Image (cartoon, rainbow, N blue to C red; front, side):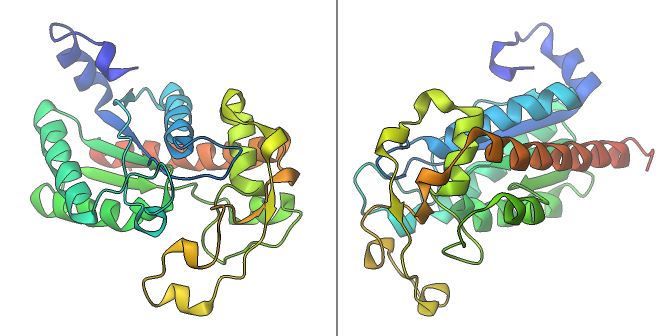
Length: 246
């Protein structure tokens, strides 16, 4: 269900029947020459729609801006501070709770948002212990990712505009991908980047962290479907808890 398409006369009963709100959240940032600035938004939004179909949840309008400090100096990137993001998410959560929602699932398409999402969830938990807040970023996909990957990851934690993320886009939003412009750029990311602020232009000119040329729709499908299955399980589990059936 698309929340913004509902009307005020009918939505109250629908909220009572569902109690689940999904917020797609992404970012506007550089994703190499072959992917759009809004890659993270498209991924979060289309995954959210699929998860909602299986959980009976409402999909809120996409929150299209995120914390992109590492890439803020690349053309097209728009950075929002963690503080601003936390404040907005908490305000939204309070409003959702007051409207009758009891499960708030933030489906995140941009790893840089993780700190803000976790902190916002903690703040909301402090106010409403019976409000289930989930922050979801491709959960449970490590194994399948390693199985389909043909190139070694540039980093132990994150991926960007590479074989993996480009495969996600080919599966979920291929109309925005231009594979004729895909490149191979496997940077040497220093260990210090994990322990001190490091703008990405210090180790990449493209914002691509891998071999985007190896991306395929099939790889994306294998990983994304695992992520969706896990998101559905987590959301259903949260709903069972608030309904007292778990």
